[in-house]
Length: 144
Image: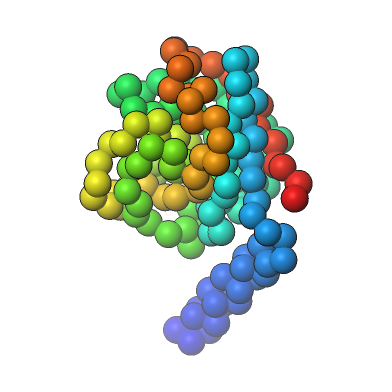
């Protein structure tokens, strides 16, 4: 048990070091009619998403509150924090489906344990709100 704990602690430390000194990591989603910039969380799921970039995402509107898309490849959620409030501007993984989502309207004020936080929209939320139907977005890491 001690060995498992030590391995997990070392893994989490390594992830923290990967983010250390780099400032805020940001992702830009560019699509016809606008762009959205997301300031990423510092957690294992967010780091794994960053490793996939650059990538294309096919977004659709879901429930009139969020845009959702499939990841280019399955995203490991091992070690990722569980739970967040479904507030406008929050980017997340919905654990049961394993998909990416960005809320553009508030969905609730209680913490939903199925949501894994990835980041928060810094600019361009108005473009998500105005987009109707599906669209393709190119995502890239913004170097700081």
